[in-house]
Amino acid sequence: MSADAWDPEQYHRFAAERRQPFDDLKALCMPVPEGTIVDLGCGSGELTAELHRDLRAAHTLGVDRSAAMLAEAARWAEEVPGLTFEEADLSTWVGAGVDLVFANASLHWVPDHEGLLARLRRSLARGGQLAFQVPATFGHPSHVLAAEVAKEPAFAVPGGHDVARPGDAVLAPARYAEILNALGAVQQQSRLQVYGHQLASVEAVVEWVRGSLLTPIRSKLDDATFDAYVDRYRERLLEELGQQRPYFYAFSRILCWARFP
Ligand SMILES: C[S@@+](CC[C@H](N)C(=O)[O-])C[C@H]1O[C@@H](n2cnc3c(N)ncnc32)[C@H](O)[C@@H]1O
Image (cartoon, rainbow, N blue to C red):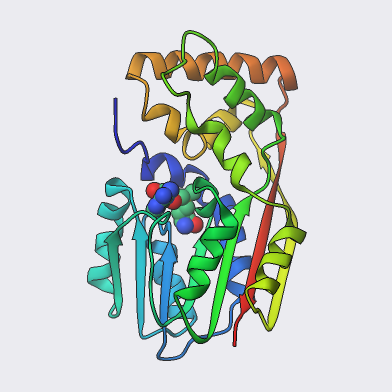
């Protein structure tokens, strides 16, 4: 059983597909010349380095709670002046005077987004920006079946698996717009975007979610039980979707950006 189930290698298997939403979120942000960026749930750091460079920050802090991801990130801190990383939990993280708080594919692991966004807004400097992207694909069979199989007696754990929680946390784009407005945003965008990924087959979906959605399950099962879980999940997915080669994986995401006075 592994306390830190994030595996950079597995996550990077779909790096090309996963980077498009990062690029789209970054494109919403204004440069912060000589300013400060915090990248929450930064992962292995290569995108944090790009963010730092492209938005011309003086200092960028990447925050993550995965030691495995941060171990990868460390080399970017050595190579790029002004870039640092820190192990912390974004459900309690508080900053001050930050010009841009950025979170790509990470906030959905934390509940109570209304409270979370209020806390992140308080971390901003005058004129600060908040940008985040969260998956909104929890009604897709890839996600529904992951949760269903996790409840089967062979894989159940006391207290249940966290797999359903991301879907519980993510709100509708219009709700995010209302929250950002109530927090005083002077400019904002909230949008739903579908990223269509041509995967080699339905089975490739298993490899995709193994690097992200399934990490909380992996952290609570021993290796043999986790392997059995993945086999059962693959079987259910093939029953539901049939074998398709290639498989078009329609992955919905919400992108939000706001600027405050
Ligand atoms: C899907 S990856 C995204 C990584 C990176 N932002 C990117 O765009 O490639 C999610 C990251 O969020 C981190 N994460 C999840 N829950 C977290 C929490 N509560 N506090 C800090 N980091 C968290 C994970 O360790 C992981 O590195």
